[in-house]
Image 1 (cartoon, rainbow, N blue to C red):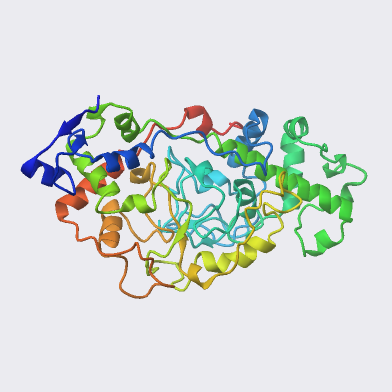
Image 2 (image 1 turned 180 degrees about the horizontal axis):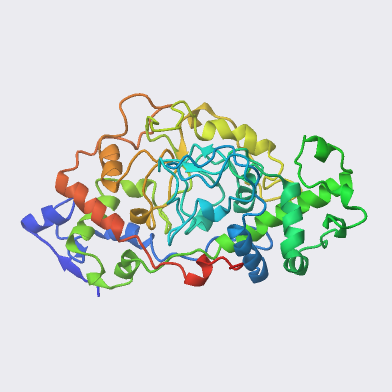
Length: 436
């Protein structure tokens, strides 16, 4: 059990920010610090998103898992394997990319692409691929720059991205009809149109490939375009249902908060005290998934292979999100009245602001930042200890980003604490391709 211990004199100076008769939790945390700590655990279920009524549907999740590992709907590669880059085939090859191509191993991160700071799909994606474990806790803003406002719409966007799958909703619809028709029809209405079968007498209604603005798409009737787009949306909602299951809990930190005193080493406890105290990490990492789901300018000067140094973060994505065909207020949302986009404007204060990343399993998901420019947790802590970069960053540094003047021992203690945020690995059956 975690006990409160009265500390006086020198012991109080070491363990607390003020010397008093205050009773300390486990001999190290003030009551205020412990109150903050208790807000960080346990990890609840992922938040419900009313814009996807299939989020907790087990049949949708099973379909989503199959589609996560599926490659057949991938379009032609624009960058091929050069023997070093981890490419998935030769230029022009199709059917080579799955979601799982950039989300691998127990923590679902990119273990393939070289250089490791970005990811290679059909082309170079100038982002470090994030872990899919606990991704369902980001709500409502998805992606590092808040590009989207639901996880189901985020699951869709790479399909028609030239750098992601370089594919189309028509190609996707044909694969779902050919390989998952019974599963799909058991979940979604309306059933898939029989004319998606290439042998059907009316198969010409649905070309093999095409997306909005392409000649093939423009030749279709509005009703057939609507049908294919509905399949595309349901693809995203099924993937969201699968991602909702990818939850890791029971980290040593959680066991410590629950009363298992020995779950953390003395160094990790000192690191936790810094986290909620002088280092002020908890100012932004203040929820059980260790993100405030907000955007901050941390004064990072973006560098690294394929990384643009002039990206403006959240500011640059507002117009896209508000006009997006599949945002939470769209007709494709199962609850267009959430109001989550109300009042969202393109404020210049958002230039250079990026979403706070969750910290669970952070010790297993290097490299770090959206640029992947920091290889180790030590690098990240050095960056924040310096108060961000001195120059070369976009926007105006947040007031909360300031030099910390941590000692080498204190930095080491912070690393030891961050390691305690790694929970249990996902059940093996959730990481298997159902088609194999």
